[in-house]
View 1 (tube, helix red, strand yellow):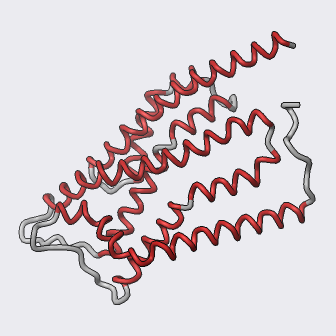
View 2 (tube, rainbow, N blue to C red):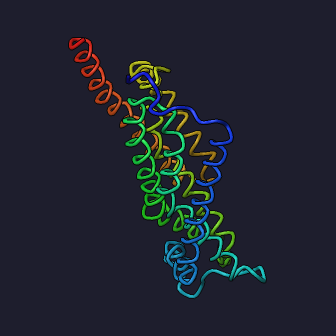
View 3 (cartoon, rainbow, N blue to C red):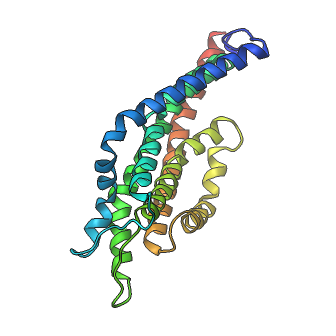
Amino acid sequence: MSNQPSSGELPLTGHLMELRQRLMRSLIVVTGFIVVLMPFSRELYAFLATPLLAALPADTGLIATGVAAPFLAPFKLVAVLGVFGSAPYLLYQLWSFIAPGLYRHEQRLAVPLLISSVVLFYCGAAFAYYVVFPLVFVFFTQAAPEGVAVMTDISAYLDFVLKLFFAFGIAFEVPIATLLLVLSGIASREQLASYRAHVIVAAFVLGMLLTPPDVISQVLLALPIWLLFELGLLLSRLVGGKNSADSDGSAASS
């Protein structure tokens, strides 16, 4: 029984209708988040700009070089936050759509993986805001040549921090990727552990590609990738051992 999908197959039109309904529900939820957050767009942007403002000299601040930038930058932030905030519901809709085609043991594994993926992404964004941003912005402002006033455009600042949010959020998914490689049989835990040196080099290369051209942010991205890779190896040992014990128990009972 565990080797069969949990429900029967639907015709293609049925799948398309279901997909359309779930996409509409997701769009409604994202729009709802945007509508709720829109009155607080200025406060949200001020909170986002806090790490940079704390690093700037007392008499300086952010500027807006575009005519519509004072409105568009906070609105873009609210739109991104709408997607971020509704991510659990979006993943639930994705899960509900693909779950009928999964085996029961895959369903039991997919739920904690989806939940942990969301939590890790949020952790990566929080790490970027509370740890990386203060260090990076202090470095940037102190590195300015003599006589240069550091005044960042609000749209450029938003694009910069969103890039770092996504970079660190994706980087924090390394344990999930490592665990999936082991559980899917693509690579064993021992094989992945033997590539530890390659992973460390790749982490620093990714840090160079995904972050601004400064050593601090590159190192602050590379080190978590390596440590999270080690965490993924540890989880693969625990989950792999549990699965092996379950398999042995099932074989003994049969």
